[in-house]
Image (tube, rainbow, N blue to C red; front, top):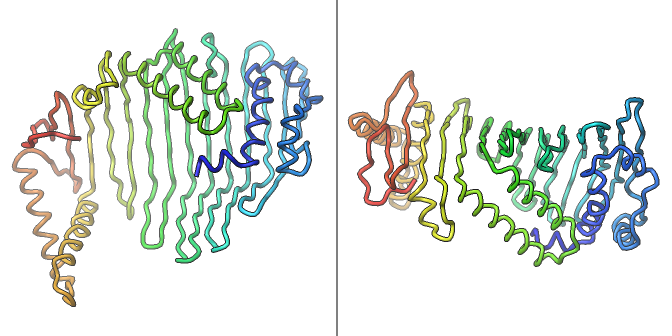
Length: 389
């Protein structure tokens, strides 16, 4: 699907637009921003825009100088559609500092829709991207980036089934200390709904600390050059993959730690929660994949409401009973209730008696650890031949 997208006229038009405008945004120079009032695309880019929009001026730019020397850029892009895709008007505003290379940016797109002849389609609504960043001594844009989406609605026409993902947000913050950089990531989804069931809030907050700032700056600059190049899709994918692999190898050679302060999911008003850390020591060689497992250190604290555990056991037991039933045999609620209670009691007895689990305030608690190629629950080694987290 991604390969097909990169071969479309629409993709080529947007790539051309970014290639020619990105240097102005990266420089964050107020003089250059004001000069955008007279900006004209190159002839090859103009031809790409004409193919999609029917003219070569779908993007509208207005740069103004403020009294304090800063600059403001207000921009918009025309709505358009074809037989498959419809995109509403894009609007945005950016501000650029005079003394410090800094910028703030907000871009809004009310909706993006795709449809097919069978009535299936996808609709993204209330898309917004915002950033408030400054350019550090390493050449990296540091600060806060945030993306939000009001709703993602997936329709499947023939079966008349819908999926819906509610308010969604992604937040990325980078902070420098000397030549090192900390990266904090947070993602939240308000709800997920499908025809038979759904989930409540899903939340992830994680942090990667003490990254090599020079290494990260080189990687970001390389990605930017490649993504705004005229490479064919196959060559583009290969170069990006090589760059990603090189970055991962360098990160693992220096040691990598991921702190997860919250990973939680709500289901029928109940919340399952986990927090912890995953770490690899310096010197890891990715050409030996087994090192990813043998040298990994993992520790997570897990809490599950007992009502959620009971619901899970009932689903598992119900599936097992129906699979073992004779043709035409009906599993009664009483049978399911009895079997589920027995299964839950057996699981709890084994876990509690062996110290693998604890129960407090109707909540199942445990600590999961993986170290020295062994898996532990509440500090007890699991009796397995090959531990695998």
